[in-house]
Each structure stands twice: as structure tokens, then as C-alpha cells.
Image 1: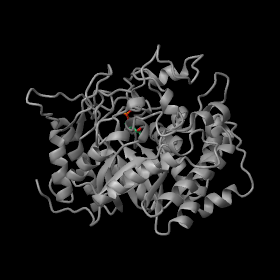
Image 2: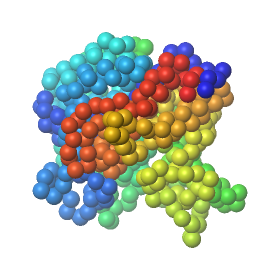
Image 3: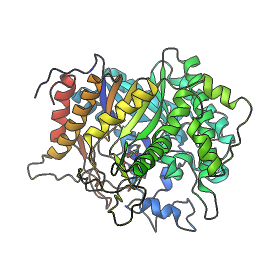
Image 4: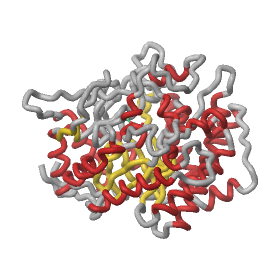
Length: 479
Ligand code: BG6
């Protein structure tokens, strides 16, 4: 169905992945270990991390590690990029694995083999006119920094990060125009281990530690923005937020206020600092009431003020419904933020509530608040796929999900939102971040690889592959 509402010219259509979930080659090219390399496969992976005695060592007797082999993009990137090109991708969002460039995180010199690998990937993308969109840190902190420094708890990590960004900006200045700093920076409220590189100890004041680590990341983000603008004139660098609008369960003002507070803290706090360049007013009360005192050094606030990001990249999978008193109500365990069940929405097989209008709401709210361009860099449906006897994969459920979300985006553009592009998540099947599974598939391209480790790694085009190709060709007019 063709409509007469348009996406802007030059809209960046494409797909998104992260190094740790698909590259494989986890110990090749002098790469060091990162936090994702010690995450076991399986639905319990995030719980396992919290078990007492979990040592952040690889234990092949006890666990499996699907990320180690990923989908072998490290060796098959040419074949995969050719498939992206066949779909007509204008952009490909990917991350650089920090430990390919600085294996331990602390070295003074970058690792040439790692740098050369991404040169090859970027060159291959440019061969087809695909613009790389690069996440600098996507749940891939060097394990050495986790173990020896407690991740972003430590201010020293800023120096290591600065070295890393300088190395990649200088090396790829002719090849990469679009950057973003920390993937889903606000996800740390729930899972600090993946983005901040530490877990909360039993006796510890969780929020004191998380907000201090955020402060270090904000300083690091501004250092990266400054360096990016100096080294690569014309480049754009964004923050990256996990976005889920928070609805009040009902019109009781107490619940509406509760939902607002949740939304402000989770969805807006990081954006307020990274885009507006200052700590928002509401957080001062929050800090006071929760006895949080930050160690802010001289010059930090000035740096943050002077170097805000250029745009907001966001992921959107679901909305969240909240009620102050949840007694007797069904909750949504699959949703990251644990809200109450929304009676108007259906959920995916993993319990994530499907809400395309929520994307339009999110885009409008973010644009109203910040007035900077937005870029949807993750959205998609994790689902079980079946290969039919004739070898085809009829993923109409995925097409339906994506179509309704692209429609919602198109409405947001009509509403006046400045939207740079859309890179759907896991454009090629990969390892799920929260559950370490292959069976939770997002891709247009199927990978013959399974949770028990079997599979040939053969790539197959799903029905959605052909559908998305038409979407891109028509610049979103034919869905
Ligand atoms: C986002 C992450 O949270 O959601 C990705 O940035 C992740 O890394 C994606 O893969 C989907 O989540 P999951 O757990 O289904 O892989």
C-alpha cells in the first residue's frame, strides 16, 4: 500500500548490529577479552552474573559462549555486506569492539590488526555506497578494565576511553561521518554490568555508584564529542538512549505523577545532560532525597556544557505501563523496566509489549524536549523462525511489526519530527544480548546456527528481506 506521506530525501535506511553479538573471532587479531566474552549463553545469563562467586573467567565446562563465534562476521563480512547492499541499505550501524583496538584497555598504542579489520569493513561498505554509523561502546568494555578498575566506577577509565576515541577518529576520519558514544547509556539503571562494567555488591548503595559512573561517562562523552568535531570536521556524534514511553496505568493523578517521575529518570536524565549540557533540575531533589553526592571535578560541568551531542540515537522496542501500587496486577517480566501489563497491547514471545504508536509518542516527546535530530538506530521483533521444507522463511509477523513501526515513524515525520534514519535491529540474525540465544531472531537474513551450537552458518534470505528491499527502494512509501 502506497501512501502520500514521505520520509525526507537522503533518509538513512538500513540495519544495526553490535560487534560482540555477531563478529565472533573473539580471540583473533590480538583482540583482548571484553565483558561480553564472559557472558554465558542462555536465558539466565544476566542472573548468572549476579551469582556470588561469579568470577568473570571463561568456564567452558560450566557454560556455553555463543558470542565467541557469533555469526562469524569477522570472516564473512564481505558476504554479509553484499546482502545488505542487495537490500539497498543506505546505512549500516555497527560497533567497534574496543578490545580489538586496545586489547586490555590500558595500552598506549593501538593494535594495528584491529584497526585494519575495521578499515576493511568500512571500505567494503563504501564500495556499495553504504554509510557506516558507528557505536563507540556497545556493551563491550575491556575485561581488564572491569576487573582492575571496576569499569566506569573509576575516573581513570576516562583517560583510556579518550585514547581509544582519539585512535579511531584519527584512523577513520575519512571513512566514518556518523558516530554515537555509549549504547543505551540509560540501561545501566537496570543492568550496570553491560554498559558500565560493574555489578552492584550486596551492601552497596546502588544509585550512588550508578550516578557516579554516569558522571564519568558524561565527561567521557563530551571529550569524545570535542575530539570528533576537531578531528573530523562535518561529522555528527550522538548519544544513544533506550527509549520506552512510560504510561500511567490510569488517570489517578498519583499514578500519573509516578509515571512521569519514572519516565524522567529513566528516559530523560541522560539525554538532559548529554544534549542540554547540564544536570536537570529534577535530579537535584532526587539526589538530596536519596543521599547521593557526586564527585564532580573542576572543569567537568564546563566541558559537559560546551560539548553536547549533535543528535539523539535511540532504540525502541516497547512501551511501559506503571502504577504506584502494583498489588494484585500482572507485571511484564519480559520488559526491561518491569511495569504492569497493559491491557491494550499484545506481547512478543519474550514478553516485550508491542506498541507502534508508542514509537510515535516517543519521537514526539524527545523532539519536543530537545529539538535536535533523532535517529532510530534499533527497533525490531525478536521471534522464533521456522525454515520451511522448500527452504523459505515466511516471517510475516516480523513484516507486520516493522511495517506498523515504520508507519508510526512516518506519522512522527508528519508531526514535524526531524528524523535522520532508521536502522532496524539485528538486520542479520545474531546472539541476543539479554538471553544469549540464537533462537531469538531479528534478521532479514537467517543464519543457520542454533542454541545447542549446531548449524552451518549458511545465510538465507527471509521473506522480510524482499519486503524491506521494496521499502527502501520506495523511500518508505511502499510498506
Ligand atoms: C538493545 C541492545 O537493548 O536491544 C542490543 O542495544 C540488543 O544489544 C537489543 O540485542 C535486543 O535485545 P535482545 O536481548 O533481544 O538481544
